[in-house]
Length: 354
Image (spheres, helix red, strand yellow):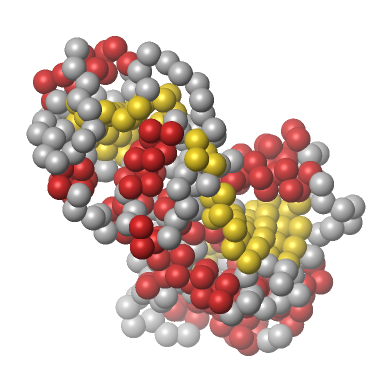
């Protein structure tokens, strides 16, 4: 077995682990490092340049990978005489579009939402595509692998069967982004449910999964609370905190609305909410849950949704999409986490009072 997946908790330094791996690559090893967001691509490039002299690693986004190694060289195998004219991130084909118009605009700009399907059909059209890729790269590293969606799972499946070594890192509990959020293909494996896909490949003997349960960000109280967001049936190991720093305000608290402004004034937490429509009655500098993925804050104050309130007050389980968004918000905090709730219900969390 030569394919590996590391599922790590929030704050486990997943990206840094890939950078450290690249630092000790054998000379002449041909490697691509793929990740979804442009922010993460720039972060990886910066770390490689400062810590490993770039190490001869090709860093690119998933879309770029599919265009550069699938669409651009092999589009004529499906549409003779045609060439890629660009990339259209926002556009979508007409509902009844057929042939070339299904995948590209009139300027031959490939629609982002159809790129995965096009790449798979090109992969199936000729064995030369995978052979060429095997000649270019000895190894492909994929960061934030849980962000893949739709036809991307078919492409990843083909890569796992290839001669290329595939090494991936991610956290399905932070699966709040998607390469194709509106796609229906393989929807059952979307977001946190990607864990099912990974475990199926492990059962087939094509993937070795390891778990990293140590967080260097969240104190143990916050780590333990984050573990409670997902039901035990998911089978995640308990998170262990390596943050032993102590301040005058550490842990997880509830805060009543009447005390919110004093709490904010005293501790200056980063305020988070699920969407712009949440907590309109509070004049605080909120950011949305999904936007802060990858960020770290000393303290966090959360305006909960009704579902989150029910989870805290009644123990009502969160469905997977809501759970991942809440998990991301909770695990941004290093020292303290506070949640705005007026009535505790059955919660055992302590209240902060002035």
